[in-house]
Image: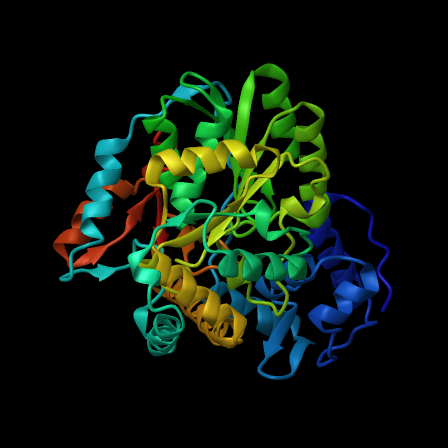
Length: 462
């Protein structure tokens, strides 16, 4: 099968899906025919694994193909498939179109109300972006912790000053090669979770009153840090699958004096959107051309449902203009609070701010994570947990389709473990949040993911 794909980064998966649909409609791919594997399609067409997977997800949602366990994707009977799709999958959310003028963020009270609910043990936690503890490698990490305690008996009695444990920075640098980033251990600063990394990056490149471009919707903690630092937010239109709309970003940087951008190009929280490789490359070039630093939050890429994770925007950075941050709280151990950042040309500033903020990191957790990475435990764990996330995502989508009111829409993430759900317009997410608490359930209402507290009828579900 040969598909002539043009280099249009924003809609590449749609072009691929459209051509395959044409082959199905024309009879080239008959009912029951196995279509190329995701990896094969990626290799044949010179597209990323993520783009190929998105194309197949789109065809699957339209009822044209089906996934068979341990076998691959097959062409389905159209009418049968469409009928089942209507029963099993809600339609997707629409592209966001936020006002693009800077605004001061002021939603602390609302976010704190939601965050406080996440600590209640009497609630079913559907609002937190935290993995079920059953699927975290608690015992294996405990063995790693015992091992490093024996190897480095004095580690708990010494400070781990910035930039942090050399062993862990070396392990991260080696792993970065797998996703297209050439980093040395000296390029990396360890942090107390990815949240601290984001805070340090923004402090390094902005001052109070500056405007920062963000996605719409975006992770509420990004908004909280922007508010705490006295910055203003400029919301950029975001597609539910393709991520940042480059035309909207270009318009924003031309019209406003943008000091920095904070984006999640892969598996954005809460939408689950992932930009194509071509779109990431164009974005990096656009921001480099204008001298605007990109702070890239990449914490969810390790949860990609496919074998290979998508490349970060940092992979296309030739000048150090991209500040890449990530961590292990989402996949390994939230309580260890091990994060990291490759600050590019701002390494010295970030390292200095780290020193004056918290001096360093807890030594033993950093050593334990390094041990876990070096001996293959992390990769084994990822294979297991990604299968779980993928299965749970499909189950959640099916449940939304069966139980939520007519008119409900939902995201189609290819990684992570949350859904972005749009309810009918008359539903108020904040009222639903309160009602859910009374029923013993915690959810994350849409307004906390917006600088303007929009998305009033959206919720994020874990």
